[in-house]
Length: 622
Image 1 (cartoon, rainbow, N blue to C red):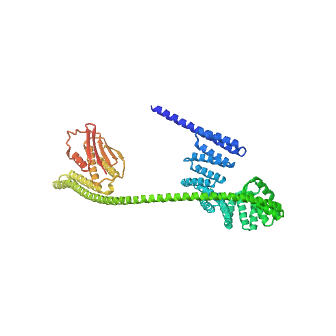
Image 2 (image 1 turned 30 degrees about the vertical axis):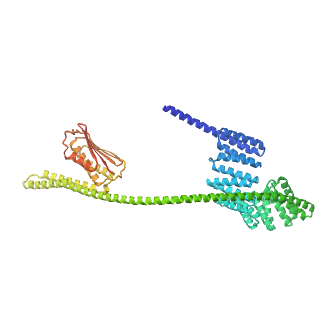
Image 3 (image 1 turned 90 degrees about the vertical axis):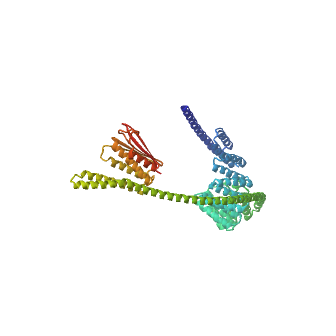
């Protein structure tokens, strides 16, 4: 069964590997098809569209969502470049649905592109609506670059419907974001756009200031054509102020930067017509004549009414100046017709502007009402929270007071327990001094008196004095043990174990018994109370002494095991052993059990004849 599961898992892993490899291969094929379609689009739009459709079919069949979304973005751009704005919008909508929840940046880009398409369709209401939707999404995901780009396009849309206040407002917002992102190119374009807005508002000095900033930045970036466009706008602004010398200076610089003529470039054509008009106004008719042919070439390639208006204005002024009134009259008629068309378009734009303002005002009222309702709801919730807070606060104060009372009681109890413990420790020490050291001192006195009598009788007193010396050493050792056990610097289990090793070594002395230590301490810094240390030491000494004196063993195995708060101490010999039922327990074994009981521990004795004896102590050291 185990091997069957491994086989299934292995098969599944291999399948996933080959599926991922297949998806990767299909993605590469789709990308190559998209690149081919993009390259083909300028030559044959229908073939490019066919390639896109085939790539999309593969992406759908293989369920490669990311590739499908990417190719739809590129497909929408192709539609846009061929002025098929509604088709582009439909494709971008489809792409936005695919990117939702998968790629926030690309989803926002779809909204941005749709807004751009609606702007070209002169449907500014839809353009602003879709771009504000994209803006909400960009703000939600904190996509600063996308927020800046959307602010720019919203500004342009407002500019196209002559709502210059909003145009300046959103251009300013975009400029602030572009500066935080150090987007020099974006900053330069915004200065140029702001200049155009101020030109429309006839605030020419402000327009000039912004155009100059745009020229400077475009120059630093090496964006020659954009620099030329900003210079052309600067020339037009100076011309509108009737500062014809400055207008000619910047206009000629713009022509020089453009270099090779591009009659399909709207900005280039506007510049030519504006320069021709300025030259006529400044009396440079021969030089103005040089712009007639280029402007005619532009007229053939452009049906944009704003350029057409400038074109006829230039030609009408020129022909009027040289006395060709027939041509001047004809161009003036064309100019008036274009002006009527522009007026009709401006009326349509004004209607859109009013419709947008009305809709946005209504939306603002609804939002304001919802906001007030939300505030009212929040206020009600806040009041409810206040009541709850006061109740909770009261409960907390009572709990704190109760806790403080309990803590004080615990502290008092602990203080009393410490006093009791210290009193008990004093009593224990006094008892030890009285029972052990007191009796030993009595023995020393007796043997000292005996040595004096033996000396007076001329007997050998060496053995008696040696016995006195041994008793003296015993007292010194016992006093040293008592002092060691109550010293607070010796309160950790690590120091206790080291001390017990030293005691064992001293007791064994020069005998041939080998000591083997097995030490397993989990936490070396666990602290042990003095009373417990004292009793553990006494139990251990008794066990080692018994093993040395009675076991007739060659090896004593000493084990220290500490886990958590439990200490397990084992003294094991491999000597002759004894029968627990027949042995006289005497003071030694009874004392060990008594001392273990005092500290809440337990002594266990296990002995097998001819195999040895094991004495173990289990006690909590916490």
